[in-house]
Length: 399
Ligand SMILES: Cc1ncc(COP(=O)(O)O)c(C=O)c1O
Image (cartoon, helix red, strand yellow):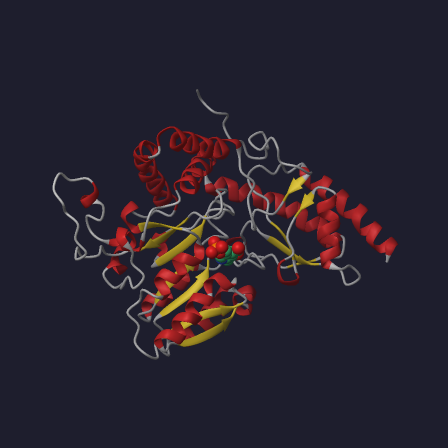
């Protein structure tokens, strides 16, 4: 039985989604019917057969691995399942063969998921954290790259950056950054959770490591994600945090006719070494269902659709006295729009009042952030702006 096809601008696959406009995909995505059905299918299989369910889903998870690899143009052998974005950052921050004094470049203003593990590694291995401002990148790619080159020239081991900045929605010029890193003998690590599913990212741009959870623009559930390790980097990593599944032939002793248990099997290299124990089958199956929808629509088409939505919304908000932080250059735009609210309005009160009237968005770190996705129809925008007018009038009238 075929399922309904996803369509840009249609909420048909989200029949229970409440409110006028769901604009919080940069936080947590709602689950579509195919994703919910896939979760129910896994639960039913495990309910019926326990380990028989496992045997049925193992090959399907291989397909998920292939699909994940395909969205970033990687090889499936370069992809490890992890619990969330942070786990992938930890794996690399604690897996590189550090030398005391190695320099790590971080950006001031990044989401902490891509900071804390590097800080921990710096303490553990005596690393030098080098902070760069995002402002030059916000002004222009050239200015940003000039600043980056200035620190790379002093010797850097790795640069850690988000593909899309969670606060402003700035899409980082990853291909240029990767080329510059490699020119100076540095590697680049990418936190891709604010991009994947809505903004194209391709590891052939020269990305060495990439990590992402699935509950934002990939539209899966929380607690399932993946880590990419470029094959060329596989032999460099020291899996200090390896588990039983990191070994070669890890599960052979559970299946053979003869006893085969050994603690000395060598560890695998690269991504496969970092899968520590059993995976989140339900979460990964959900992610698989969502990726099928995204692949059907195509990420470039989704990006263009959301960009058009944000053009209208941004214009309407500027007219109402909001200040936009969206990049001017199309290449630096993502599917996030953040604005500073007018001086006479309290951000938290505005956010709560909008939610109360069915417009769901977030307010990270002092800004109001909108993140539509493929189900949001362009025709929603006038309704959203009408809600803004009502809410602003109420807040100002009540002040
Ligand atoms: C850029 C960025 N990285 C990471 C995360 C979350 O990390 P994790 O998947 O480990 O919860 C978020 C938001 O929650 C984010 O905006």
